[in-house]
Length: 239
Length: 197
Ligand SMILES: Nc1ncnc2c1ncn2[C@@H]1O[C@H](COP(=O)(O)OP(=O)(O)OP(=O)(O)O)[C@@H](O)[C@H]1O
Ligand SMILES: [Mg+2]
Image (cartoon, rainbow over all chains, first blue to last red; front, side):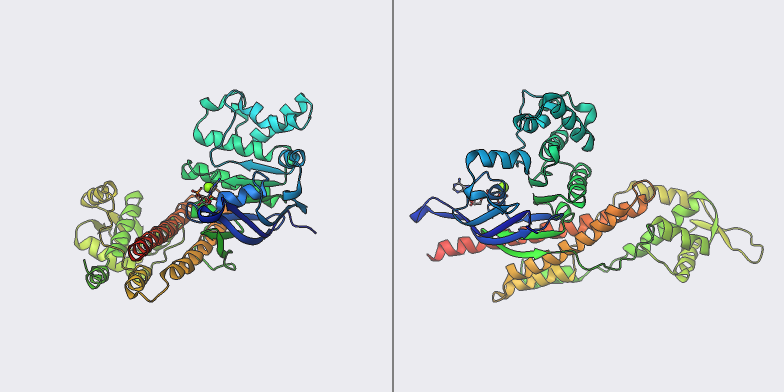
C-alpha cells in the first residue's frame, strides 16, 4: 500500500551562488497512514519548508515529494489546487482565516470551491465546527473569536470534507496549555480514525502526542524519537 | 564564577522537602477528621494520586514529632486504636503552609545539569550530541506520560491528571533548558568562528 506521504531525497534551495540557502538538504522520510508525526527544531531549521513541500505550496528543487503516491512536483496548478481542496488540509503558522467570512463560511469555502452544493457544504462545515466544539460560534466573524477559537476554526477548515492528511504549522503556538491540549486531542482523534497528520511545534508537551518526533537542524533530519516501549509507571488510580 | 564553584553550589544544601510534605500532608488529613496511623497512610497515598508510598514507620515518627510540637494530640485510647486529632496550633500551622508559596531556591543539583556543565567545560566533548541524546530520551518519556494521560478520565482521575501534568511540565521545562543551552553554545561558536576568520 502506498504511504500517504513520501519524501525521496527532497531538497529545497533558495537563491544561487554566493547567497544560496539550503533550507532543506536532501531528505528521505515516509509517513504512515494513521500516523501523527511531529517535527521539532530551532527557528530556521527548515520545518515550514518541509511542510510546504508536502502541502504543494512550494516545489522541491531536487528529489521528489509524493502525496498519496503522486509526485507533487509534477502536478499542474489545477491538480495542486485539487490536492489542497480534497486531500491535504493545511493549518498555517499565521492562521489566515478570511476576515469577511464567518467561522462557518471559512470552513465551508474549500468545499464550495470544490463545487459542492452550498447547502451541503454549509452542513458539513457546521459538523466540522461541532467536532472542534465550536458549533455555537459558527456565525461569528474571526475578529470576534479568541485566538484559541480561531485556531480551532482553522483546524476544522483543514479537516472538513474528510481530507485524509492534515499539515499543521505551529497550531498551538498562541494557546494556553489546556486549549493547546484540546487541539492535540483533535489531531490524535483524526489519526486514530485512520487519518494522517504532520505537526510542526516548538512545544515538547504537544509533540509528545505524536507517534514519532523528527528533529531538524540546519535543514537536516538529525534524530527521531518514538515512545519508549510501555513503561512501568507507579501511579495507580486509572488501573 | 568558575565552573568548580558552580558545581559546589549544585552539590550542597540537603533537601528537607520530603519530610515537610509528609508532615503537612498528615496535618491536612487530620484537619478533615481524627484518624489513626494506618488510615493516614492509605489516605495520604490516595490523595497524592498513588504516586507516593510512605511506610507506616514514617507515619508514626511524623505523628510523634507533630505531637511533640503541639500540632496534634492523641485521643484517649480504647487500647487498640490510637487516633490523633489536629490542635488549634496545628490548624494555624497548616493554614500558614497552604498560604505560603513554595520557593525553590537551591539551584538544580541533578546529574543532568552537572553532566552538561562538565561537558561544556571539557571542550573536547560533542555537547550538541549529548543534548540531543537527552532531548530524545526526554521526549520519549513525555510520550509515555502523554499516553497515560490520554487514557485517563477527566472526571474520575483528577489527582492522577494533576500529578501527571506535574511530570509532563517538568520534563518539558527540562527540554526547554536543553534547547536554550544548545542555542547558547551555537551562538558562542558562531562568534568564535567570526573572530578567527
Ligand atoms: N523564500 C525564501 N528565500 C530565501 N530563504 C528562505 C526562504 N524561505 C525560507 N528561507 C530560509 O530557509 C530556512 C528555513 O526556513 P523555514 O521557514 O523552513 O524555518 P522554520 O524551521 O519553519 O523556522 P521557524 O521555527 O522560525 O518558523 C531559513 O534559513 C530561512 O531563512
Ligand atoms: Mg516555520
